[in-house]
Every structure is written in structure tokens, then in C-alpha cells.
Image 1 (cartoon, rainbow over the protein chains, first blue to last red):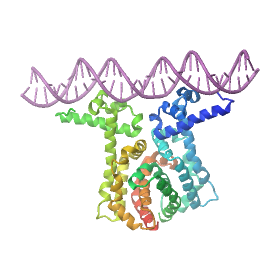
Image 2 (tube, rainbow over the protein chains, first blue to last red):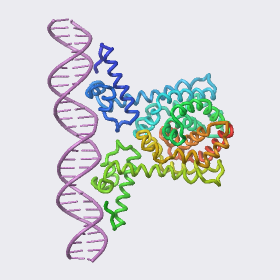
Image 3 (cartoon, chains in turn purple, green, blue, cyan):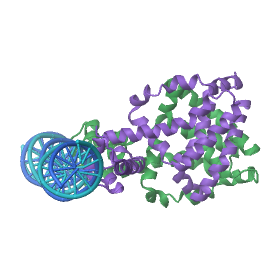
Image 4 (tube, rainbow over the protein chains, first blue to last red):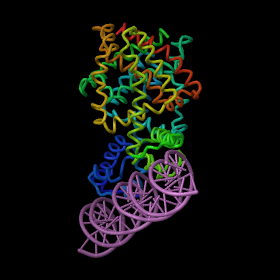
Length: 205
Length: 205
DNA sequence: AAAATTATTAATCATTTGACTAAATTTAGG
DNA sequence: CCTAAATTTAGTCAAATGATTAATAATTTT
């Protein structure tokens, strides 16, 4: 693999391709994306894409990995911080995710689509299973909701309340007659609403 | 356009293709689907697909329309039934959708993806905007939540709590360590949980 | 500055894929 | 049965597309 020393130019070109690839892939998915689209969006010659990344698939895998990373980083620091109460964790999680999703609204649909298309790739990969179930967060949740309700319901609800609005963004703006600015404002409101709702769910069952 | 009189056969072949097309399209999306896949899944010759449906695009549009129809029918009868209380409407909506989604878990991702890809096609189409905002349901919601909270928040939450688990099905089964059967059982539990939660949201703001 | 390495381009290739054609086979009505 | 319409098939085509190549330009190294 070639690594250049003339960093100024190469990093810029490679980065240009990656940026364009993230944009086009995330918007259209793997199959609907043509390498020519990416090349054009990046303002480079088609052959350069293969020069730097070997193949469409390799480039896609790279982007996908970085996207998944975005998702994980937004949780990581919250779920296992033992100094935070359950409510504080929920609040931080919701706040962090909504901020991230405001910047990357296409991300959830992109990732979930990909999981559906290739479940096997994600089955083990992150070992998210164990990490999640053993997290301080999940233990707190079990303790707080003990007996009244399956804590998985709470987790699913928290994720749904936070992520779903972005997945269905355009659809919701359509049926509810609000525009982009109003939508973003509402998402900010949800930073306070969701933790309150989740707290109620835990207590009320 | 040829219409046969030997109805037995034609309906069966045409239906076979449509069933196969729905399956493959919904699983893989438009671009990733090859007409040859559909033909194979339907157990028919490739040319037959074009014989009955003219083109891949036409077939896709048909399937998409039917899928959207599924979504709408599940709401239609509930939203404007003036004899139902708000809580009854929510309960019926959630019940109906969860049942529909258990049978068609790929539907939401498929439709939302398509809306993202071609927003213009859905912008006016259903005029869902007006229909929804003028529904008896929405008016009841406004009355019940008056002042405390934007009713759109409630709608978004209700949809999210109901639909999101199916969109993220595989992902959730992964991180929460539950299998398909447990998942379906949980979805049944949510038929009772979600209306209760929504009621709390409305009252508490 | 010469040589070597790295970056970029235009042109081309090979494969995939949606669509079409023309012929063969089956079915329905007389 | 016979004929015409309906159905089905194999074979083919043209466009799209991922990838490669060979030549050229730019940059770095010696």
C-alpha cells in the first residue's frame, strides 16, 4: 500500500473521495451508488477511486466502519460511567444522540438497512451483546424497574423515541406539516422530554 | 395490454411474480434487486416478468403502491372514527400496526428508505398532510394535551414506540440477546404498554 | 538536474443486467 | 380437431458499470 510523504495533496485527495463516498453511499446505499457518482462528487477521475481504495466494496466497508464508529462513540462514554445516576445517563445519551443525529440524519437508516442486508457481518462484530447487557446502565435499569417491566422494553423505547424521528424525518415533516427548522427545534425539545418519559416508564411500568 | 380469459392460470402466474417481487424488492431495495432474482424466486422465465409488467420500474412502482396501501389501511379506519375515545384510538392503532408489522417486518425500512430516495414522489401523493392534521384523532390529541405539549411530539412518539422496534429488529435482538420468538412476544406486550405510556405523555406533558 | 516515485488522466475491457425478439407451446372457443 | 389468442421459452442486444491499463504529469529523492 502506498503512503505518500507529500501529505498536503494526497491527504486532501483521499479525504475528498472519502467525504464524497460517505455522502453518496449514505444517501443512496451501496447498490444504487455508482463509483462514477462518487468520483464526480469528489471532483476526481474515476480511476483514482480504485487507485486509493482498490474497489467500491473496500471503500464502502471503510465508510461503514466509520459510520458505525460514530454510533458507538455516542454511547460508549455514557453507558459505563459509574458516577452517573440512571436518569443522568439517559439524559446524556439522549442529548448526545440527538446532537449527533442532527448532524447525520441519514445515518440510522443507512446502518439499519445494512444490518438487515448483511446480518452476519454485525452478528458478532461488536460483541455488542455482552457489552451492552453487562453495562452499568443496564444493571441500573434492571434494579430500577425490577419486576414491574422488562428493561429491554425501556431500552427499545428510549432508542425509538430518540432515533425514530430522524429515520422518519421527511415523512413526519410531510404528515405533520412542519419544516426543517421546526423539526430541528422539536428534536431539541425532545432532549428534555424523552428522559422524563423514560423515567415515568421505569417507575410506572 | 393482454387480458386472458383463462383466469386460473394467469392470475396465478402474475400473482407468483408479484409475490416474489414484493419479497425481493422489500428485502434488498430497488437497485440491489435484479429482475433475474425475481424471476428465479417466482420460478418463471425472465421474459415473463417484462411480459406481464413491462419493466422493472413498473413492477416496483406497483409493489410500492401496495405496500404503502398496507400502511395506510392500518390507520385509516381508526383516525376518523368519531365514536372512539382518544385512548381507544391509540390502543387500536398500536394493536393494528403491531399485528401488521409482525407479518411485514421489512415494510417500514423499505418505505422510509424509498421516501428518502424520492421525496418528491411522496410529497403530495397522499395529501397525507391535510388528512392527518384534520383527523378526529389529531383534534382529540390537541384538546387533551392543550398547552402542555405539542401534539406532534405525541404522534412522533407513538409512531416511534410502535414502529422502531421492527426497524431495528435484528439490531435489538443482537444487543439485547433475545431471539425471534421472545421478540414477537415482547411486541405483543407493547400493545398494552404503549397506549399506557402515550396516555401518560399526554397528561404529564 | 537526473532518476525514481507518486499522482492523475483518458481510453478501454469485461461483465452484468434490463429489455427485446422471434419462435415454440399451450389453451380456449367454434 | 382447428385456429387464433395467450403463454412461455431460449437467445440476443445494448447500455451501464466496476475495474484495469498505459501513458503522462507532478513531486520527491539522490
